[in-house]
Image (cartoon, rainbow, N blue to C red):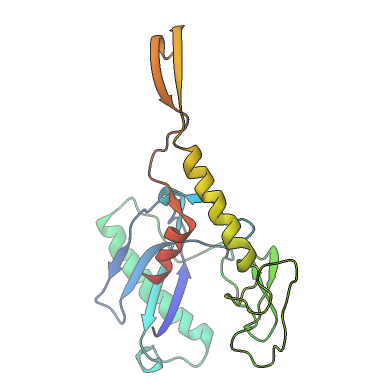
Length: 218
């Protein structure tokens, strides 16, 4: 997969598409992204029109990366190329205000040696233990949970979260199918007559959490 860098963007909400750039030092993709690492705050459905975007660059090996003596210098060089791509994009779409200059801290770096990672815009911490591969973890068990001897996900809360979230999504999908029979007389918008009306209507197709996370592999 190589080395991937996601750089947050400002004024990118609602772009609603994936844009590929090439021609400079390295190619770049702008893609919608699920920011904040949601777990407790994860939604059953998302709308593409409300998703923020990131600029994503990928290097197959360290030799492909711009030379830099520090992480800060590397990020400056990445942002320089990204800004040039965004300038070219703004010439094609003059209404675009997308920029790599951000005012809100979006990404953070977890300590891979620490046994808690931060989620939900750093409002929660989840226990992370690689129980399948880390030989230093001799036992990890919750007798009240169906997973007792092994955990399929190193973020242990996912073993609780995913089945609950999937059930919630399916329940909402079923509820969205509901319609009601209505008879009205001189109603302000329905007028007079009979109609079978949907309980809920959406302006665009809702995306599930799983679908939104597929943007991470673009």
